[in-house]
Length: 80
Image (cartoon, rainbow, N blue to C red; front, side):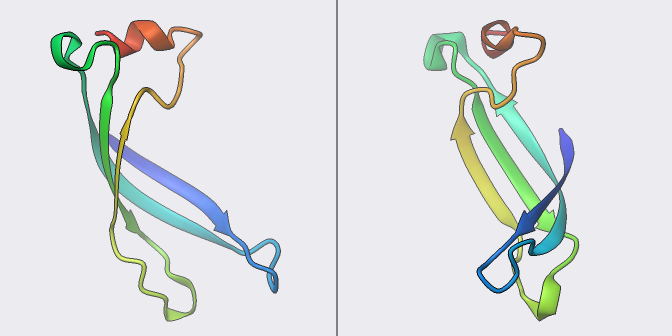
């Protein structure tokens, strides 16, 4: 699964911060016999813009559970 993400990073001097953009890919693993109704998530994101010469590099994210529900069907999605 591919994704695009955008968000603001703010601090005291710049309350509205800079809009940062990233693209990446992820996988979702589900096994009712091992994980039950939980989904294992693994995502890797790559920044498209780094303000002021900052070097953020790729970001790895590992988590469990479904982050978003679709039309109130979160539990049904997690067990398939």
